[in-house]
Image (cartoon, rainbow, N blue to C red; front, side, top):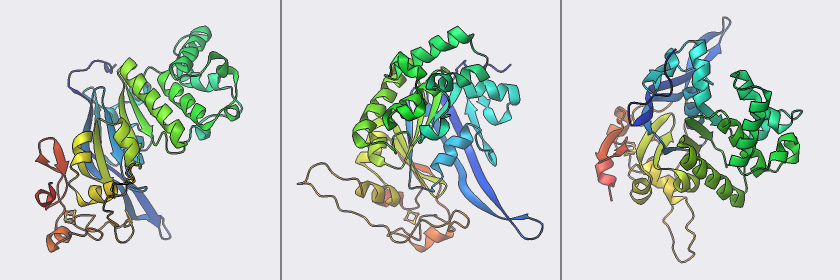
Length: 333
Ligand code: SF4
């Protein structure tokens, strides 16, 4: 059996050239006539114990990245290296073991909870599948997970409809936590919650990370939320990463014109201060037929002929600050 808990490098996860296409079938024989290029050759690493924020507009492929990394969606090509093991090369038994260490928290925990089961049973489901502990031990582990996310032990006997949105998200986190994971994909975990509750859930996630040494991929469309929790941030546009840097560096000195446009839309909490808003023209193009060259060029206010002719590589333009733009140096402030 492959050793999944031993760690040798600083990175817990290395995603290399990950591609996820959805085939579009048509015609009499239902042949593949096109491909939706949801994730198109992206690479990044996540260091042990860090939170990497993955941000972009809806439809940019960020959720697909998280689901493909965990094997919830089949990948088209590329690799995901966890502790020196390509998770896509594992056999069924090894994949099952790996899934214990790589968990996910969904945006809508209600949809993933069985309304007929007390939540204690739902939280224990993964333990049963992995044959961890006997009934009594599983019950103890469920209670411990409930306490860890700030819920009470008696909640184990309650049903999903008896909880508020914030409590349900805590249950979703407890379900992942009970498996004692190393890595969790947080898929828009606070997007459906009121702002006051969002802060509570984010604080819980931060406390759990500190207490259990967890590593997160935090997927979100809200830059303000990503700024609150991430150590580094990757910005996605139409299946590609266009910028990746430390949180402070990215928010103080965004370089890519798309990142700058996203940043300009974040409200400033001081009414005396005003930010110049960049309104992007047009809609996000279809991933079925993405623009040639730089995918952002039809909407970029700085596009030049070169931009539609060749695709810019994600390259280091400032130490540890990566940008996919031919003219990135012109936008460094
Ligand atoms: Fe804009 Fe060209 Fe840079 Fe793309 S490569 S972001 S189109 S300037």
